[in-house]
Length: 149
Image 1 (cartoon, rainbow, N blue to C red):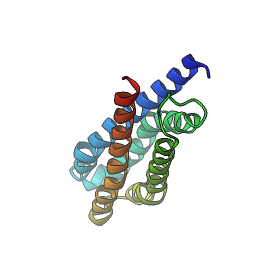
Image 2: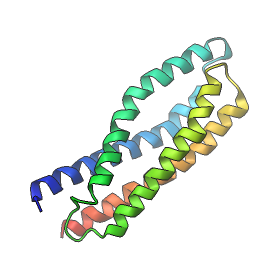
Image 3: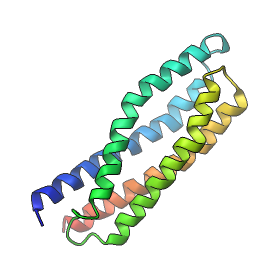
Image 4: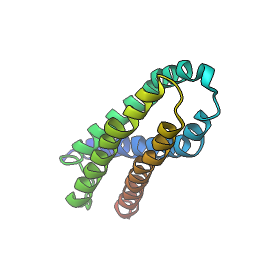
């Protein structure tokens, strides 16, 4: 197996997972709660801009993470069990499902105007992604620890 390719795939996986883990914690603790302070009169405009700009910050690393996670089936570090690849893919499934079936509908509803209940739902359901990305980050750390020996 090409050791350089294994390292590149793993490094892309590590970087994208850590990026998304840090970003989701920022979103969960800072960004989403602050949305409630924007004000009703400008909230719809704010939410539309938020959705547009966030796409550029989130979609490329999510796609890189997904691609790298699947490439690990063929290019994984020596000693990395296949079960960890499957665990990571499962967590990505949870994240993507939550994104498209829980958070995106909340954002679409909020784009029509602020709704306190929908805002609360956005924050509470986003814990699913926060937890799943945190677990992915821990998996990556574990692999780095065991692979680095």
